[in-house]
Image (cartoon, rainbow, N blue to C red; front, top):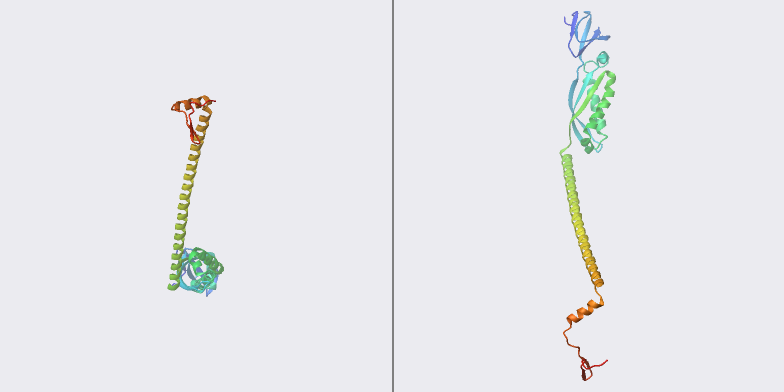
Length: 255
């Protein structure tokens, strides 16, 4: 009775595909209430954004097995809904989206090493989105995006990656400590150089000052002052000279 009813209601976010004895008509029904011929049937297709999650296995370029959990978001183009139903039917996800998603994911993952897969997750998702979008777009399916939620490796490989990261961190720490030690040593050497230069400059200044004082003293001296200083320091005794066995008294000596 429902199939041969003269009216049909299309829910919001859906499109009605009209068929006559199995033949798809070249028009569709939009949301709302519609009258129709009892001889025509209407297949309601969801044109809202739909999501599907899956878990699969792939291999990296260095032959590491990878367990991948991802989600694809897609919509059915309303203008192409009739064509999609005619070519694929209502099980379009199982028939075209899911197989293409598996194939494209394996293809993309095979171009990266295991470490590259970890580091380039966003790039991987974008490449898969672009590839599958081109494959299913001809059927009227628009891929919104592909999100890679998890990439899991074997326990052995995971342990190896962790060990490598620890080694890299230790190397970075060692290099940092060495660089700090070099900086400290250079600073200490620079301080010693500055101190030595300051000491040398101070010694030079003292020597220059002493030389200047000596020069000024020499310039201030004259013969009168020298004789005066000799007289001031003379104790009144004439020097005695000795020669052979005789002692000469300088007081009785004549010129």
